[in-house]
Length: 197
Image 1 (cartoon, one colour):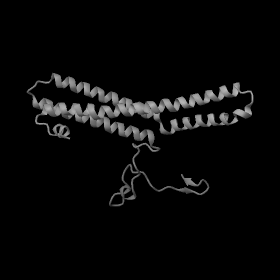
Image 2 (cartoon, helix red, strand yellow; image 1 turned 90 degrees about the horizontal axis):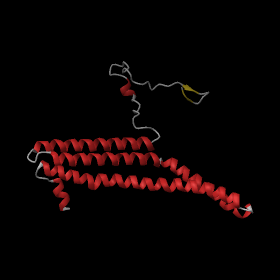
Image 3 (cartoon, helix red, strand yellow; image 1 turned 30 degrees about the vertical axis):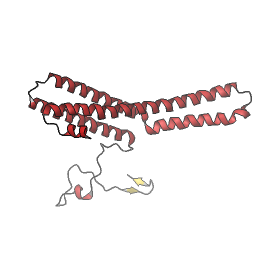
Image 4 (cartoon, one colour; image 1 turned 60 degrees about the horizontal axis):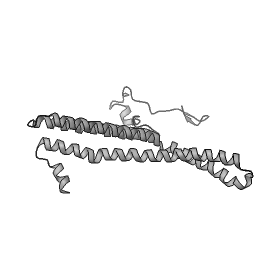
């Protein structure tokens, strides 16, 4: 606990910058590495299960002399393959794996650049360390926002970049004139189609 307090209450910009680099290594980089590793394991297990179950079905069907004895296995293995494939597709583990690996690489690069800047900075230039620290904070924030946006894009049915529809109040100005570019919420209903047109 005292170590964490020391990291938050650095007395000099140089010390604060060094503490932030260590924090990035200890928490951010470790989190991305773990997330990437877990997604790799999940991907390998699900993909391997689907492949082995499919091959197992073919091998058992080809070698079985009496299909009555192997009927249960011949039904179970394709079901297992379908389940693994469906889970692989529904969780979008491959896309999340690529996203987390990209985040890990970006954080690793930022840490390496920050260490190089720390070593190259003049020892008495507090303003330089402050600027380096703020730049590093901004870059980490940018990576985190991009990761959050991308993971929501991957797992969401509606991508987050789509703006919500404007309400009726925002569709018209106070004097009743329509706001230019505002979408109209009025839709004609077609009872023959059963959907807005």
